[in-house]
Image (cartoon, rainbow, N blue to C red; front, side, top):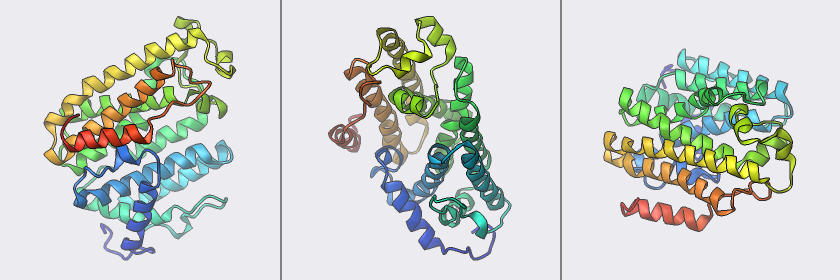
Length: 302
């Protein structure tokens, strides 16, 4: 531990907490796959546990005020961590959510071991706070700015774990991470609309003649399908621009980066496979497809 003190929850217990949280989620095959060397899995779990927890606080709290209070508690813990202080005992939320202080001893250990920067954590929390305040995006640059804080910091943390962060790798990683965030948005248009969020920027909605009222339809109108085809092609270009990242990282990380990118591309293909009717059914990458991606990555076929 960077603070030189004994955490209130012992490190092994905290590591177990992070590992269980990371391995219990659907998208785990993208964020901590079996392709990682065993020595690197726990650090990935520890970072993922923070990202997952913050995301859940932002999306699953009872209301915006509760979410902001929860995110403030996480910010307080991050501030303490980087100041070399132990997790605060008061971290546990006052509502019914699961206490989150259990992840911080393990995260602190990873931060100290790999000398991680504080800014990616601050940026992530900034984006999650923005979700409570901005419900509709007016322009594509505004959306991309959000992605630069909601997704790109994760890739930069991964590069730091691999001791591979520099201007070139950061830019390539940002392309992949933004692509992943956009693919997630277009997959979850119906879910986001149900909680009052519209990530499709007004500038492109107006270009394709898509109104906000269309998002309440039981099936996706033709204009919205055309817009989604455009947005999916746009997101695909992010992945293709970012994939050269594999030539700039250690061998142990290359297959996992390919799996990240091809998992995102598979999500876009799933949207296309239902003819962009995302309001009728949520497209997703099935377990068989996931397994095929992992198998191809294992044998260097991605």
